[in-house]
Image (cartoon, rainbow, N blue to C red; front, side, top):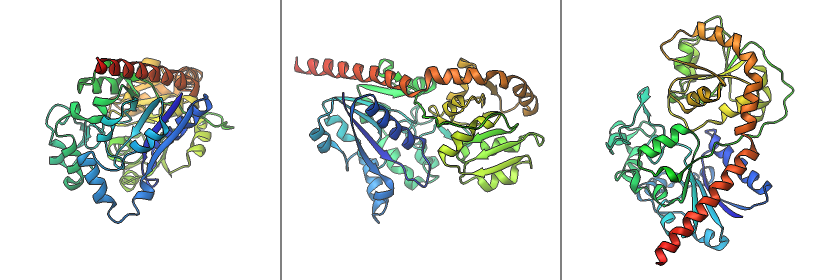
Amino acid sequence: MKIAVVHSFYASAQPSGENVTVRDQVRALRGAGHDVELFAAHTDELARDPFYALRAAARVASGRGHNPLARLRAYAPDIVHIHNLFPNFGRSWVREWQGALVATLHNFRPLCAAATLYRGGAECTRCLDGDRWAGMRYGCYRSSRVTTFPLAWAGRHGPAADPLLARADQLVVLSALSRRTYARAGVPSERLDLVPNFVRVPHSEATGDNGRWLVAARLTAEKGVLELVRQWPGDQPLDVVGDGELLAACRAAAPSSVRFLGHLDRDDLLSRMPSWCGLVFPSRWYEGMPLVYSEALAAGLPVIAFEGSAVTEAVRESGTGLVAQWDQPLAPLLARAADTFPGLRAHCRQVYAEHFTESAWTARIGRTYEEAVRANSRLAAAVQK
């Protein structure tokens, strides 16, 4: 199959699992024998333009501007797979593409200016529920009404008017929670395919466990690390891997048993993962299905997930750890985890092998592509009639 992958790469200054996923998936598709071309826009390069911010805002607000349409027509793929268009591609061009089209919904950008459905320390679905200008009032994108305006304007008519949601033959979601959320927004459920991302796991010489817990996350409000370290028991060792705007606040709030390791190279983190006793996942927003969850399973790390995210549902469904409530004491839960997690390590690896490997993803996405081609053919036939 001839596949065109379209992705606007986020700036390298802000580590992105989405960027990693796209590169890995392109390699996987080529390894499976497909002819794959990546049509990319890189924020690192485009941002050198002194008028970049203004141009990007205009693109987002209008949906028009830089697009890969001419190059796609020259390449003539069997299918186009879009990952991210924000903010370096326009969106209106997708209506002009006549061939089969799949899009992966990595986050909730079509429903929420912040892409997280999270505001002020809690879930927020005001825009999703019809209050289209709530994001503008609260300055939800980068805490600024000015930077939020282009997104609010683009979404003023609701999800049904979003060019990508309306045009894609199939939409890939990463979790059951994401599927329910987009269905609630009015996207037909038959166009929502659940295809979790896979992760490549390097060989590791590390062995578990070192008696320390692990958190690996950006130190931003929606990730919940600050709330976690505020209530973390002082006699429980915890390592925090990651950096972000709340680093100083997290350091100030954490007991002495918490170590901050900063940002680690991904391969370094993955090679060391088996040495921890478990992953703590305190995210306070829905999430899609973060790579760190499947990476932990591959390393044999059971997970403590706090209520509210897609990972919580995955832990419950697959039996890969424990679910925590924000209002419960952590010490008894950690004691229970210390007793049960060693016996879960093999099970976690098995869940990874069944659901999050490259081969599992390739088979699932292949079925999605086939259904998109069929749906597009049916639509073309109907139009001709």
